[in-house]
Image 1 (tube, rainbow, N blue to C red):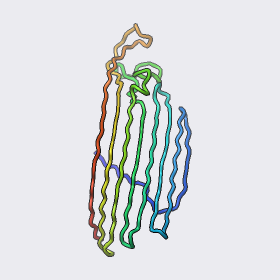
Image 2 (tube, rainbow, N blue to C red; image 1 turned 120 degrees about the vertical axis):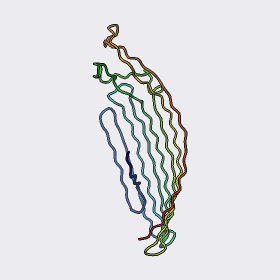
Image 3 (tube, helix red, strand yellow; image 1 turned 90 degrees about the vertical axis):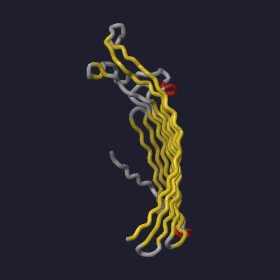
Amino acid sequence: GGMINRITKKPGIDKNEASLQVGSWNQRRGEFDIARNLEDNNISFRITGAVERADSFRDQQFLEREAFAPSMKIKIDADTSLLLQAEYLHDKRVTDFGIPSFNGLPIKVDPKTYYGAANARDADSVEATVSAGSIALDHRFNSEWSIRNAFRYYQYKLDRVNAVPGAVTANAAFASGYQVVRTRSAIARDEHGIFNQTELTQN
């Protein structure tokens, strides 16, 4: 068991930041973070995002990912503020279960060997999309008491097809000396959720 303390980037600063990363196996990733604090108008906003593309040393493997997260904070008065946040994440890749084992050890094949369809990008891929939005209202009554109400809605879609290597037997009829049984399964999910949390705090 465990917990993840997920802290999002919020408005309230002035910032311009962009980065580009490249790596092995045709990996490319671009990120940006733009923020403005318009104190005269009691408004601040922030927009972050990223796009990533990559291949792999594994045959058929690839990665396509996009993320986008805008947010805005409105200062209603000296004691009250409203925070609006949204996020979008799309991720697509091959579901790769690696190299199977025989007698407790990985079978001796080229490390890039993929045990799935030759057109894995279309036949063995997993595609996930998350869209979410939240509204948080903070109000301070005095130096001791404050209240916060946070409302959040999300939608999650998943389309996954797995090509799974199974039992391995020795078979001299194959160039590798092994025969691998493969199975295929598919999962489709479409869910959404609504959360509301109210906190009354005394310092």
